[in-house]
Figure 1 (cartoon, rainbow, N blue to C red):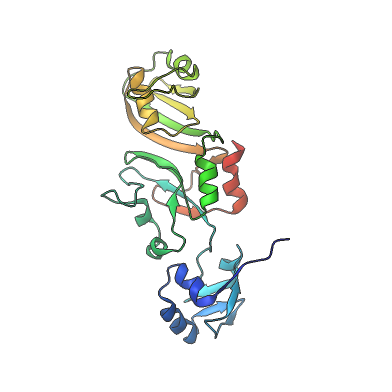
Figure 2: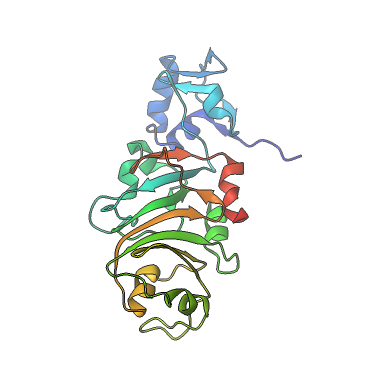
Length: 245
């Protein structure tokens, strides 16, 4: 059985973005941190860090943020970028401000472009991130594409063949599954994540994507009750549904 890791209280809270270690000493001295309903008095005390910590610990009257490793599901809206460096409103601006200075830092698991909405995962767990995006895993991703022109009926065979070459690339795409939903709407399931892949695939068959939404990664589905711009922290078992698709 693995041993539960521990960390000094001041360092733990500072790493979660609540402030400097000096400021955490002040919060503890003011009685603002409790564990199992008891005020903590020693900021140097070592605290067991488990997934149940937000249930057991409060800071300033609120449950403490989840400690690492954490996986966050975000319903990314259109107009928001995934990059830390790209100009414009960022996905990290949709999270609590202190989460931007967590240590280890949060990163998106892959990206959705600015004009694409839907399911996006954010994590501080490098191992989980690399498992999801690894080409060896073939994690399927499902997109709903609204098209400028009606489907011809030939797109499904083209995408499933595994021979489609995108412009300026030298390697054909892996087979993909197309499920028509209406004359101008379709679900496309792919196992890769090339640059603007879905848009470029439809462009290659003479169509144009006017709206694109990702609703699923593996076996993890974006719930209907998670509004655009909203997020929730996933339990470990729920995050692992990504690999059940």
